[in-house]
Amino acid sequence: MDLKLSHQALLAVVGYLLVAVAIFVPVKQADQKQQNEYRLGDRLAVLFIMLLPMILSVYTINCLVSGSCNMWSWFNSILVFIWSVLIFIVSLYGAFQASKQ
Image 1 (tube, rainbow, N blue to C red):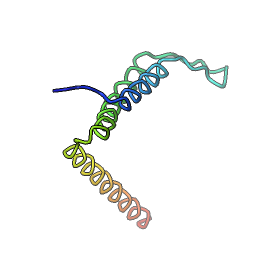
Image 2: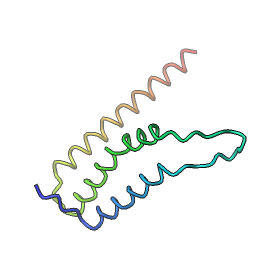
Image 3: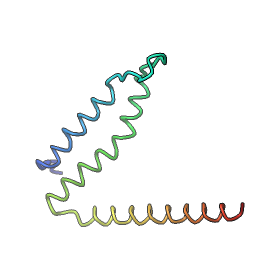
Image 4: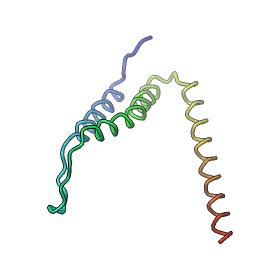
């Protein structure tokens, strides 16, 4: 398995590394009266949650450059279709619930 990344994918990796660093930078509250507690565990959880979309994004960018991603395009199109159907169902359910009131 060759894991050579394109320049575009490497640029995305650098961008995601910047985002990862930014997650751990302490931020001051606008209201100085509130004490903002720095929770490393929460920030690690955010980074962990973002890790899968980051990896998939870099893979997609690399796939677009290499041009050999027929299976990946099917996977993405199926995910978009499922996501769209779920949004449609939730919208219909919300409209149905609103009409009952």
